[in-house]
Image (cartoon, rainbow, N blue to C red; front, side, top):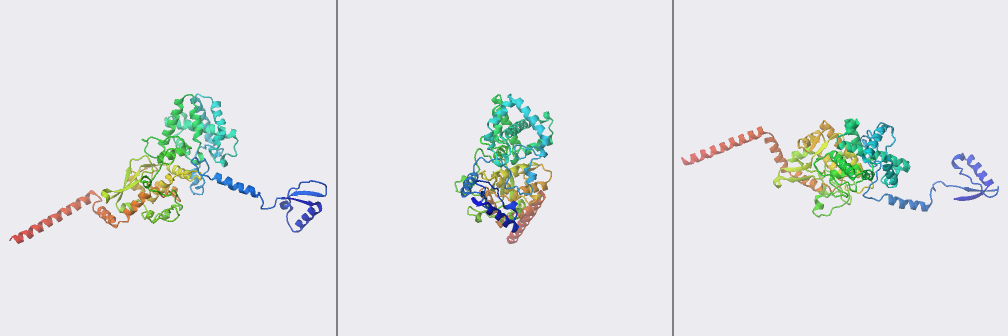
Length: 504
């Protein structure tokens, strides 16, 4: 806003301000001299008027465009779980940084030389020169920059970002290829370093665009080399999937990054979300919304899931708390020969007793917590439209695990393989990553409802107690049969005595 005032008026205002105790440093605005010596043109930016009305409405339109959901989420910093008390433990790299988010931090400088060495070996193997491969990345840097959230790349020039992605992409492919062919020792990389680097490759903030890896794989001197590298990636994903390895891995078509490929492997999805509930398969229309209330550990008992209107649906209510309580009513655990996490079901033997909860086998080790935590963070990305399949699985598993006794039962049932060393550690991991989750209420709804219907039948508790008391071991079974045999003999003897009495 522009005002034209006289020189005398300007000085008069300054005197008045000083007398009032105001600081001229805070209130005087830049002065632009124009016209004769008696008149000043002063541009004054009034407080609170930082932009015009048109600019404010323009921001509304820009915000709408930025928040649009899509199927190609950008690589970004963890947002929704950043306040989690275990954020740094599960989200920050341990030994190596990849991409722009953690680039240049002093904690990862020791591995920079290793990355250069691995990148150099990769270039040799491709049959191309380094300049040729770098030129491809440099030519496509605008597109590759678009795979990242703008905030994490804005401080890097195109040249700096291209070189960073070139080195990191080459080093990543070489490392994965060495692990897949068990040749890591040839490069004098110790086993503990291999484990930590592999874990860092599945961190959300450490992801590289899969398109970057594609550019490097597709431009080897022969097609066999590129196909071999893709097979190495699939083998690497399979090995770190925590599930049965004897399964065909998902296609890398439309893959966003390695973490995205791992998620597809665990859920059995391809380029788009293919997970469906039993109700959806039967044709019943289900709401597409997800739970709007976090699933906290202290709310396990008597909880229900909000429906699409935000109200709690009584048919989703369940009161069972953990594996121990399921066992008390005669629900048995059974491992399911499945390659996907989502395949959980419940049924009754002879449609009565006992109940069987079948779940896929899963291996738990030091990498399980970080992998699942980052997969959950990935599903929570604001620009990623998905069905919250991993979040829902962890929420369901967490609802079964309260303490080490539950882990023992899952382990004895061959559902959970514990490589952490103690059952307390396993329970702690799932309690940590299972806090404040927002699962999809449609997934496992049918399983939860069936378990609850079985659980609330008092007769099941009585039957289970009788069986547990009298048939918990071979000796109790023998004792019961012996007592039953003696009772039978007594009845027979009594019958014969009565018959003999009447016969006389």
